[in-house]
Length: 227
Image (cartoon, rainbow, N blue to C red; front, side, top):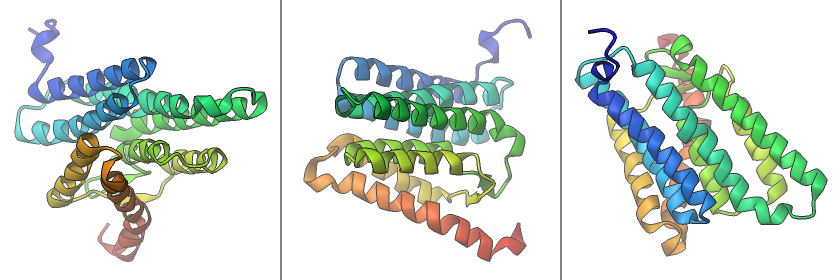
């Protein structure tokens, strides 16, 4: 029956729900000052975010899919990473009223851009590319900036840039299954080894993100006749 909410839930929706729960757990870890667990849960949410789409294409598509995904992403890819960044830099903001206000304002700008990006995703989505930087990439940027303890003033500039590109009309290519597997492996390595071994895993993830963010639009521009 259509009025039974549970029956509307598909396997892909359950994965989307796990995405949201990982985001919530990340925030609990932030409040508990468990930084390692916090960013690990956010990265697990990213993996779940990628997996729900794969499962949806292989199984039954439900009526909740688009709504469930957007709501889950808002928690794990919007709110949780903003909390994480604030937590990492909070100690540097003590006694700096004006800078503190600017920092919070920049995070609010980023969060607003994330909301707009996620709310409009299914309206402007295309088959071969993303319009605007994917929210998953933006989230990874924020996590990596924090892990590498980027200078506070540089961080403010970088977050504004990422937020603007989130809601821009710049096109970014959708990755192949093989490239998505590589990204998933790098994310898993970042979760498992963290900042050990000279931060090798986060560094490789960062390099991959930069290459995608800069090279992706150039690639699509070069082959724009195909789109």
